[in-house]
Amino acid sequence: MAGEFLVDLHTHSTASDGTMSPTELMRAAKNAGLSAIALTDHDTGNGLAEAAAEAEKLGVRFVPGIEISADFPAPGQLHILGHFIDPDSAGLKKMSSILLESRNERNPKIIARLNELGCRISMEQVEAIAREGVAAGKAVVIGRPHIAEALMRAGCVASVRQAFDVYLGTTGAAYFPKERLTPRQAIECIHEAGGLATIAHAVHLRCDNPAHLQTVVSNLAEAGMDGIEVWHCDHDARHVEMTLALSKRYNLLPTGGSDFHGRPKPDVALGRGRDNVRVPAEVLDRLEARWKERQLAMNEHE
Ligand code: AMP
Ligand code: FE
Ligand code: FE
Ligand code: ZN
Image (tube, rainbow, N blue to C red; front, side, top):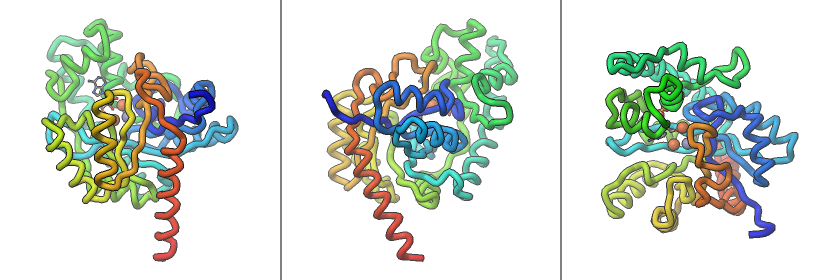
């Protein structure tokens, strides 16, 4: 729609498994005509200061965020987004370092298994891929997409999708789980950092049917969730309809974003997803209003 202000509340940078630096991502948001963007890297707030500084220069509204993986029965995955978090929160930093340690234990196991299966890649190669475009001395979170890229470069697979299907996905031959927070712990950590917690991409919960999804969402709302992602690159019209209905039923704020990663998801565009994402700025306004209410209530409590 002409004149409509669009936002993207779910994106990744080189601080986790995206391929654009926080600065490049903010410039891409400006070029895409977005009025606001949230950076929500996996398990880390390390890209937030750089992104905030660049967004301010460009006049793009910026929301500091994070995406945390929480415990959930396989083959489903529960990712929890945090928006309006304080990147300097001590609790959040502690949680990040625990999750990073667990990745540091898992990644070599995945690579050892891949080597057993005949895929000759090394931890050094994966680290080098994760560090591409990242300034020296900056921390990065190394994840399976970096391993997928190494597999592609070694000629073991033809695509990221194939890497996950055959090796890295929950049913893949080289899958190892990593330590996770319980949903309640993740929500509390986000709340302690002053943020709002929302259920990311409900489609990846892989619930058997709408009734099961409703139970899961109801329990998560009970556990303190503030919102649910409605618009997402992997949500079709039916998922949008279901999550929007659940947002109303359980008084959860609807959010949305592309889950842009850059090269690992070449068909997903910033602000647009697979041409199925258009998040109006009013969604962010409502989120911000709830956040401000929360801040006020917390200050009155002190
Ligand atoms: P990790 O953080 O190491 O557990 O890797 C999880 C990330 O891998 C997700 O956030 C996605 O970016 C990516 N991912 C997970 N499953 C797939 C898949 N089937 N195809 C492509 N990317 C995936
Ligand atoms: Fe990712
Ligand atoms: Fe996710
Ligand atoms: Zn994401």
